Length: 196
Image 1 (tube, rainbow, N blue to C red):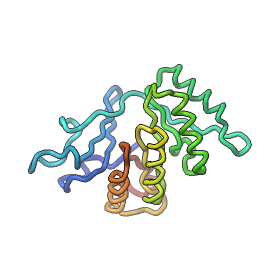
Image 2 (cartoon, helix red, strand yellow):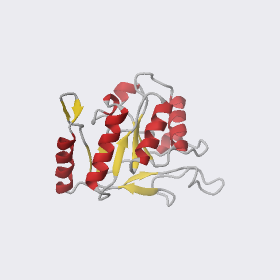
Image 3 (spheres, rainbow, N blue to C red):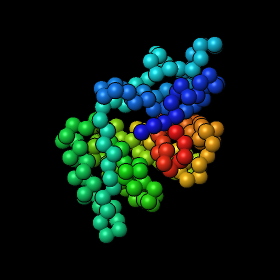
Image 4 (cartoon, rainbow, N blue to C red):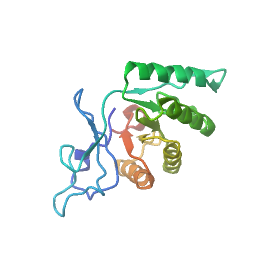
């Protein structure tokens, strides 16, 4: 997984964008909200190791598939998948992302999956919901809905196929982060976005 790394943004003015930093096994994943945690004037943007960076997610998170039966989400099979992860001691779950067929689920199916997993975990672990799309407006709305259903964060992939410029990708994430009531985790699939 790769995302917009903080160093790539260089010395540009602070923005409201969350950037994922993945380190060695055992390290924390860190997200930084640059606008709300910017340094005093002249100090530059936050860096992953500075006190303005907040650890938000740690450990192993399983990206669940969305089980289907006869063209519909199989909620009983989903329960079994979640229970298996709980029994294994996983620290968090990711649903409705690229592994979980997020782009092929309808709004009612997405809602059913998020509600079922949030209910099944009963708040015992963080729930990250994939809300990515090529449409900034659609991602903003999906992220709001995910938050309303109890998601702890949104996993937002860079827009696929439309191949926006780097400035366009950053603007996409800024707009989503500004409207999001929960942290967003930025990631990219270079083969689908033609960027890295």
